[in-house]
Image (cartoon, rainbow, N blue to C red; front, side, top):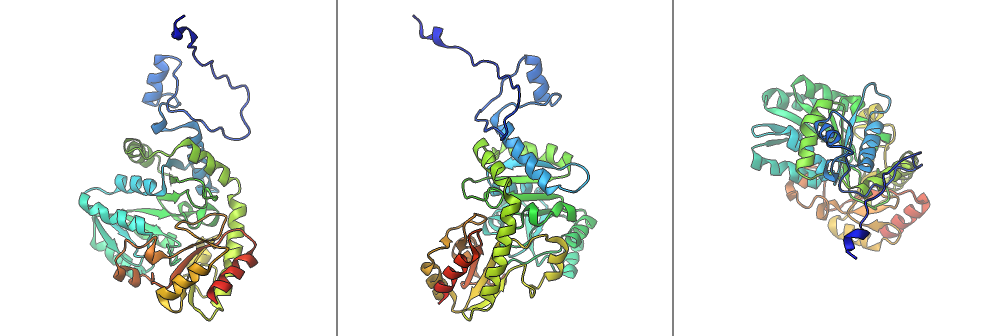
Length: 393
């Protein structure tokens, strides 16, 4: 008997009622009932899925949910793309917005990977200008003197110094001079801050962090309210460059989003307690946390942040030797190069996340060898403080 006689096609997938959880669709391609249906889906006349690199029901569900969170309470729609990583999201946005001859304005206290990516655009003829985006007078001078400046890219709170930029003011100036505002909202999450509400054109996320929340996957997201920009600029680049996220990571993010609000409340309350403890410790020279009354950007924070988040950084007296000693003595907190997990995570920016920056740039932006970044988890706060206390002592 021929082996081929045992081969049968899968039965039709009749869905009588849907699953409680969004299903994990592990498929690289999708079936057309007729050639006419296939043509219509390719042409965009009919909704449907084509190929895994173009999207997937699980992937699209994650993108739509993140977009809905960023757009919560606002009139009109927002549109999302689920990406292979946070860097894939940023790369897609900048590739779409910045062409040869364009200028991108950003800050100095920026995640090292984002900074290196922006610098790499010089090979494509894109120029970078770096400035303190909180300095309104300087900002307006730069925008007015550079008509080719078409993109402003900001992190607020910034990584790792937790500086906060006034998004309404920045958006108004950016739009007045015909540029677009891109905001990395990874630190705050849409639970803590909604950049679209304050005038941002595009929001990017490393969903690896808080949106997933459990350190189980790598992915990213893009959100905008500009349908034309999404469909005609970002989507083609996203597909052609292969930046699509996979169904497994999308499914993990969808599950993480179910507890995002609860987790962010606990991250924030724990971080506030830890920041207050560190402020009083004699071995700590300074603490950077948006929830502290003495934060230099407290007026901005009060206007745009709902929660202060779980990220903080602090400056140790004694520089690098003391920083190393402190980190090596930790037993409860975890030394690892990421953030946004349910566990408390510790990172040394100058030797890890920001090592690609030259030392002068790091120092000019407050990233010293004695600076430690903490991603405060949701554990019992006294356990976190106890470990920090014994390591500091």
